Image 1 (cartoon, rainbow, N blue to C red):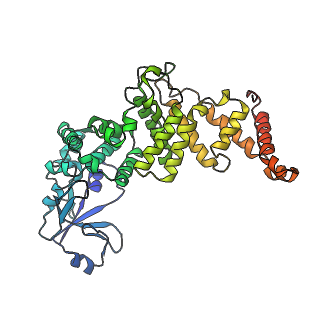
Image 2: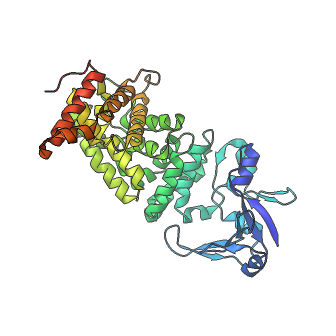
Image 3: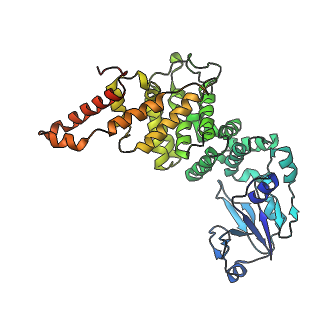
Length: 409
């Protein structure tokens, strides 16, 4: 039995980066041998074991044989006869196909060390085309390693996988998993650029793909289209270290602009309503978690009004706070404001431009939350009048806190 450190741990060590997780491959072992040493088996499709003390993953060396479509369409051989070279040959990228023995010796059949030095993401071999998840992984690595480029021959294979329909067999849960990881990388826009370059974006997120080529309004910078703007917004969310829900909301906030009739361009009339519908469609299709879905819907619906905050009438401000559920969910409302901040600054020359809306709305929210609802309830003899009296008290509170606001109509 021989044990090797493989994959990301070796790659990151060679790049001088901190190692988050260590994965191991075991050559010459059987499941029975692993269990006898106290390992606990967790793999269903192929033998993976958890170390009895560290809980690190140890996988038996294996080969793969394509048996069907999609990333689950494989048969595995994990017998003791499988060699380290055979195991490394099934991996996706050369930089992830390097193994380190216990004595420190490196095994690098795909010349991944050279590709690390050249800053290239290159597939290991022709079997790359058998697993559509690899398209998403390459795109995600492009977002993480921002000075790496995708090898032209790898991009050709990715296009073939799109053209032959392999990418259409990705399951929703795996698409979301990889998109979520990519959004949390250093420069998420690179993920979507790679997906667009190989044609996968149009198949996985056609609503987003349609934004490229759609012009911005004249008061912004017409030299960048809506798709480029959205990429700048997403990168703003990463630069600011925002959470996944904020980054996802930033990605989808403008989807409605892609459905604007050509005769209306470059204006985008009522695109927020269309955006809300499309965000709902995307979230249902790729099974987005509730927290991310709900914030994305709020940002799509309210970002236009948030931008106009100080220009709104006082009753509009109160209604927005109520409709956005800001009183019950103030932390989520702050996330909404963060996504709007990214939208505002995600334009050429607007990176340092003052954006007063977040402070404005937080001041308005503080005023509304300061209203003593219990006292209003006790003082109201007609229960049917409580909502109106509460609404009026909130308007009065915001008016006192922000006297420059326009009066209600």
